[in-house]
Each structure stands twice: as structure tokens, then as C-alpha cells.
Image 1 (spheres, rainbow, N blue to C red):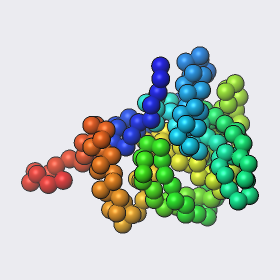
Image 2 (cartoon, helix red, strand yellow):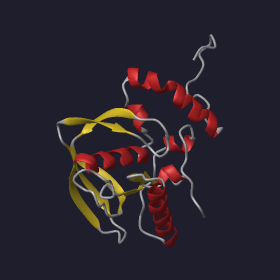
Image 3 (cartoon, rainbow, N blue to C red):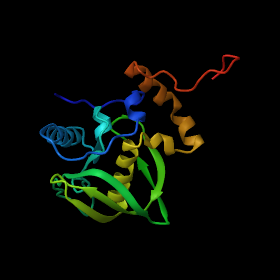
Length: 189
């Protein structure tokens, strides 16, 4: 099976993913393909729902990002199965986020600067890590996907209003993007 990234408007992106009880050959194949897709599109994270699988699996690699300090980045794919945030720092930090499922759209999102996360690895061994800065942000962004939340759902009203046209165009391109709001009796949204 070959996976493709689902685009904004696809209803799968708004569902809650199910935890895994273990690793199977099909789960390993999914994880391998997720890593390949993430690198192909120069992403730093990808969640299983973004490729149509409602499973609590994320792939991420913040080490591959070229910065002033990291001029020769190396790939270091990290897989987190059943990740859960145990603690969030009290201080939030803004960052302009994008998403492989929402191409061409960016917005400033405030998230806790640091998190403690419990997850399972590819051998289904449990781990806890403390993450800060970009790693914390990517983990939170991808866990949001597992919970049916997109980064645009976290934008303020003004930012979201400014992006409404782009988001509407993406919904139309998916062919699945009917407005999720219900009409009232007068026919207005």
C-alpha cells in the first residue's frame, strides 16, 4: 500500500486516533512509509492520520533542519507510538507553524515551550523525555493531529479570518471539503 498526505478538508483529519497494542509488520510498513513521505516533502513531523491511518503514531526529525548553528544537518528519524504529554511548561512561546496537510498556509501558534512526553518506541518499549523548543513544538503539533486538531484550529480569530480564502481553496481541492457548520433554519451558516 502506498500512502499519500491527506489535505485540509479531508474528514479523516478531524478524528481521534486509536492507541496501538503492539507492533505488527503492517505497522512497521506504515512507519517506514511515514518517514519517507516526511523527508520527501521536507517536513519535520508527520502523524499517521495525515496519511489516512487513525493510529497513535508520529514520525519526527528536527535534527535535519538547517540553521545557522547546524550547517550540516543529519537525519535522525524518531518514532513515537501512543505519545502522551505528561507535563507542559507554564510559559508559552509563539512560532510560525505550517503543516504538510495544509500546504501554503502558515500561522503563529502559541504553545508551551517545554513538555514531558511518554511514548513507546519501535520495540514497544516505554520512554519518557523532556523536550523544549522546536522538538516540543513538533511533538505537540503531531499529537494534536492524533486528537483531530489542526494548527489552524489554534489560531486566533483575526489570523484565521486572514487565511479563510486559502483554507476554502484547499477544502474545495479535496472534494471532501463541505463546510462542517450546520445551516440554521434561516439558511445561514
